[in-house]
Length: 511
Image (cartoon, rainbow, N blue to C red; front, side):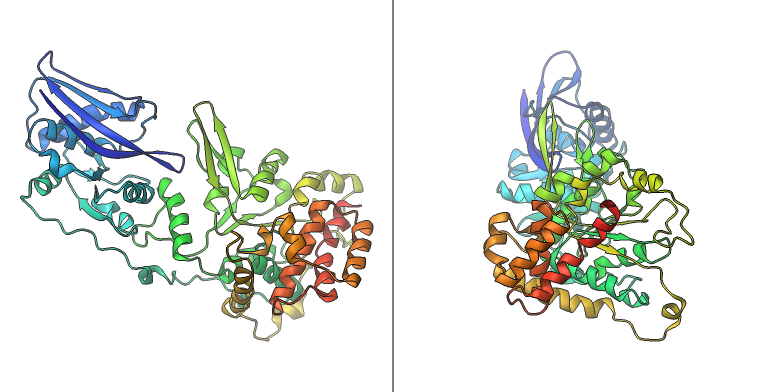
């Protein structure tokens, strides 16, 4: 009788669960049986593995073979267990020594001819292997550059089962995948959009700069063709570049869904997810029988853009309320609870009425009832989570044709980074890195008002019928505007501008 075990891993949501692939060979009725709470695709691995081993030139004896994937309480899914099952089986047969597989995590799908195919979720698996103290990971060759993003662990990329066996026997040498230097990916490919493309709309560009400087949520309201979507699509170009740790965190989410670029596995730019209004709740928040991240989590660290906001189902928009406050989303299932990150900036755009021409009554043909029905698709609790609401006017011919040089995204980004640096220094050690993340207690500490500002805020609170949440949103935005001017105390001009960003929603929803 022979026994062997090989370490692998399973992904539950974004969490990685270590899995021990055990193989036992004994005398008895010839059978190849697999146990361990397996999904249908994992059960099918028995046929893939047997055929791949045979086509690699290794004969499996007619014995009783039992494969167990432990722990049995974790559901195993996908085809990533093919390679560890094969190596565990060969080790139990005596083709490999257990010592060579010690402290090694193995992941990979196999084709029938023994070639090793790429799988999803490599980056979080390798990161977890390093945490567990493993020395080495054996991965599909195509996944090796992604695995090498994790420093401090050896990455061996193999193209076939035969190559993996020869490497473990010491018959062939495979150089570990060289760790990808951060500098290689630090500058993402230059995009084709820039703020210099936008003529006019200076007040709107100012509002966007304020929103990005403090990480605030933004709603743009205006007629069709006024540039709402065009402006929103350029928001990522003025966001500060993510740190190395942030890039790895973002890449892990994309890795689990198999969305990592093979040429540039590390995502060094800010994500921009533009969601169509036909999206479902599960696609937006994440879900399914076994939940996987949705658009909210794919926008983590970047921007989630909702165009034609009033066309979204009301129930879908309400899903955003909790993630916007908590910056993470909880999904509960009978077999477990899942937590996905959702620290993103929300940018939304919509028309002011069904025809889009309000308040131009020479063009607008909507009745008050039609406007009320249209605007009611966006609830007040959802609006309360918007920090800045800005009206985008119809652009004039003279603005389109003027030859004035517009500010580039690089120019604006420098100012945004300066404001963000002030915030990071102020909140160092608190877990907060932008004004939008301030808690109520922190607002009282960092957003102090003078007597004149306090009186103005009192008047605005009454006149605009503000809620406690919108009151705090105004203070956060005022704090950001002050930071854009050097980080001093909140003054009257800062507070007036912040209040002005809350008057537009009252113009439409307060009618």
